[in-house]
Every structure is written in structure tokens, then in C-alpha cells.
Image (tube, helix red, strand yellow):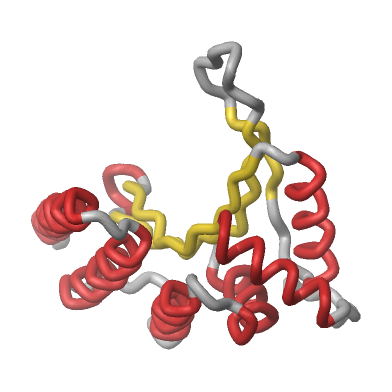
Length: 185
């Protein structure tokens, strides 16, 4: 819980949060390059995007009561007069996402499978050494990311794009592993 005391939160609020995540949330694994020598990083992430700022602020307060750190930001984009301001809240990292899942997973309906895959990924990551870099581990992390992406995108075009993105991620991971192997003494 990020070294914070257990907080008391009403069941009604947890159920509201789960409903909000079902409708407006995404469960994902962010994949990023961490500099040329550090390799690829896989980080769990839960995001919520909405145009109703009070709902996003309420969500942030509930995250705080759960002991989950979150960031609220306006989404800046080219705005047309008919577009409303969008707000974005995100929870990053293994421990924070796991704490959130511990609170809301049993109340989720439409995103329960995504939450389950994210939990499985986090629990697997927590069993690994701090600086894991084996090719098999990278392949498994990419498979988790592809599974979540596939679940988050329900259309046939989205499924095709997810498969193509997975191939690209596998190629990137292989390139990084080859670079690291070439630098090893």
C-alpha cells in the first residue's frame, strides 16, 4: 500500500468505482524502451478517460482512500468547438495496480477478464528477479500485453492490428536482446 495505513472505504464507493472502470476504464501493459542499454520495460497501467471532471476527481479521491496513487490530467488535443474537455486519470506500477485490483476486481462485470489478465501479469512479474532480461521472459510479457490489447479492442480490425502490433513488439524485443548480447563480455 505504498507504506501507507489501511484506509476505510465504503463498499458502495468500491462498487461505483468498479462500474466506472467497467464503462470508462482500460487495463493495459505499457511497453516502453528504457534507453539504449536498459532494454524494454513492461509496466501495468489502469486508465480512465471521461469528459466529466467531477467524476474523475471523485475517482481520484477514491483511489487515494484505497491507498492507490493516481495522476489526473486534462487531455490536450486539437479541439473543435463541439469537443468537450477530456480528463485522464491513471494508475501506474505493479503495487498500485494490484492494490486497485484487490479492491474492485470482484465488482467488475464487463472488464473482469482484463483485470484478471492484468493481475496474472503483475503476480508473475513479482516472482521475477528485479532486473530480469531473458528472452523467454520478454516473450511472456509480450504475450500478456497482446492478450490485454486483444481484450480491450473488440473489432476485427482491432484484432488484426493487435496481431500486427504483437509481431512488431516481438521484433523489438528480439532486437534489444541481440544488442544486449552483443555488448556482454
